[in-house]
Image (cartoon, rainbow, N blue to C red):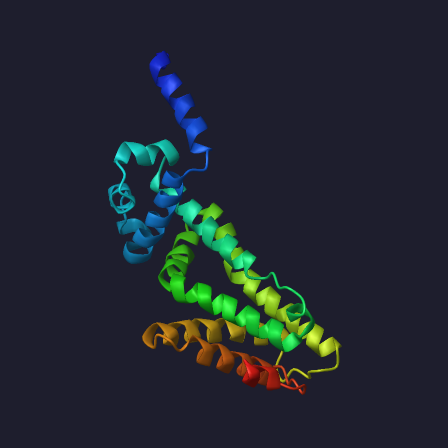
Length: 218
């Protein structure tokens, strides 16, 4: 078997080291890839498209990512991290179940407004890529589990008698959040309206009998 030229081995090692380093160029490539995948989908997008959108050369792309699939995985991971980050609340917000629910719904709607197309691409890619499937499971499951925990907490506090199965209620909120994000796309400036409406629907579904006055005060 022919040995790999020493020059190529050294270049490969140097590339592997550089790929692990966070840099403005890497961030720009991920951001550019996010836009390209959202517009073209995975199959139609090319490395050339991503490099052009990031304003770098194709060789520069390969310094940071070996394949299109690898940069797509990075894009999906960033979106997953954004969704995970949407669950951190400061006191006194965390002490008020109405404000917590509203904040959760607003955070997810915000992310979905910016990512509806990308979410669809990730879902499609998850069918053929196990790593993307794992990320997709978190993207879909985290909001649902978060809402389910909120329902359970409010119910256990004696503030709600859910009118439907609690897990199903959480699934309904998935649909509601996607619909709100879609409407906001059509009606710029309507974020607060749809966040409040979605929050009120949520509390109606779970049979909440506490006060929602704090929503009107916002």
